[in-house]
Length: 361
Image (cartoon, rainbow, N blue to C red; front, side, top):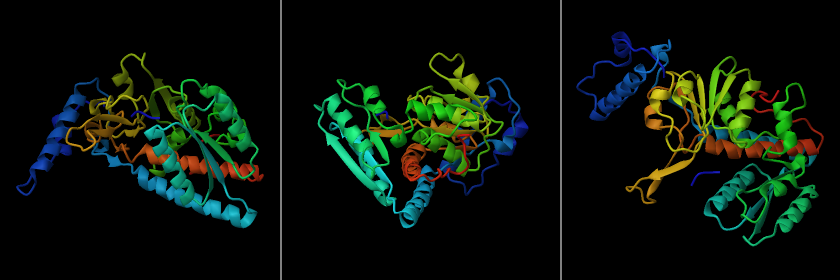
């Protein structure tokens, strides 16, 4: 099911955060206040860092579902303009192998978004027994199709297929996921040409920050996770926006100590609710990339989805936070649509449309 505060609290601070309850207040409100006190008191036991009590939670929830819908609306208009002015319909091809339920669900969601944006879409579906050469031949065929501007191979692939070899077959001008060596290299190099496509989940994280009015320049950022899919690319994007970025990983010593210094935390490690509320600096922004499951006997499915951050404790301290689900996930698909439009524009010799602000150079 995986996918693919530091503060010294005095009595005056506590008093400023919590007012005396009235008789009209419900027990749930009192319970929430109690939890908030517990989170803040726990944080107070950590090494102190000066912070404004007014900056502490409860957090503003960053609604990724709404922001993604807004972006898809913009993309739909961009696609319509591309058709009316240049006679071009953005085309997205998705290659799916096997019968994995999660992969089929992701492909269905991408197809729905493409249809909503007015794209031309192509599906190539294969059984688990497909050979590596068959996939390579299919990708070469799609590379040569002028109606297809972006090609996506849904991962994971069966064990007998070398994913890297298959992905390297995708023409860089149709690398809609933005993971080719050329696109990643252009993203990381300062002063060079921008990538044709930016990795979708990292781009979605940055777009959430920008559209939520979170200042990045000059801020301390901690990225938890160093994967090629999220951790490393999002760190480079945030550095290009003049943030000071620390990348933490499984060998990092005193991970909570690093997180407590961060104005912005990006959690992308794939460990359910690992980041606790008492790790969070009061008023910090938390972007939770993780998608995990945890047992929930009361749920008909027997589980619920959760992120890498303990949402209930973190929201009492953070200034802003993304939920799971409904945070980064919808943004990933929205950025995939954006990349498709930009690759269509590139094929027509038109300039790339940046997102909110250019964060690649």
